[in-house]
Length: 253
Image (cartoon, rainbow, N blue to C red; front, top):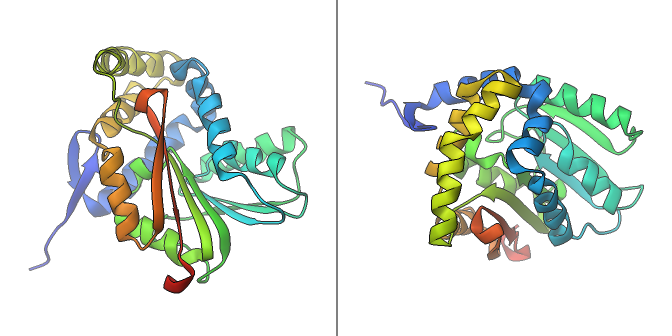
């Protein structure tokens, strides 16, 4: 008898084989309104979070980046603007619609060179070992079926001394802010999703997935268990989001 495994999809527990399709379908529905929704529901603060993320990464000369769950290219374009003309960013996402939005955006901004757009799952990266200097994932780890396998793949494709960075919603540390944030998330964000993206269910999933995501300490442990060293995190906006980082130790490569 084959043992069926389950994973989280918002507050639901679904078959592990089903989540990938559910997430892909969800982002297909909201792709053309994704960036606008980020601005509206975060009141624009997501731009500052991402700027802090890039500042933390501190892109170095001619590095090779992979941005997983890179979707509309928000992080990739920031990386290119902060690095050198010879740098290269592979934008990798499960959803073709999101990648198409990213390509169109890059063209609109006059960015043609230094970007590759590849579709696939984070748990099975089609790249050789030791291929990239920096692995980034922003607001995407929550949506991956097996976070543990995705982290192991991140470790595998990084070069020795390669750097891992994750920007993700996390757990608010201030009790009063946590209460206000929870009320806003569950009562307002799905309604904004219904109004702007015409998809209340997608943004109900968003707030539920944030609620079920591991704490800062739990995610740090998962990153360590994937093989990374010098693992740390930095809270932004009292822990509404956090930047996690780790290094692939030369000895572990």
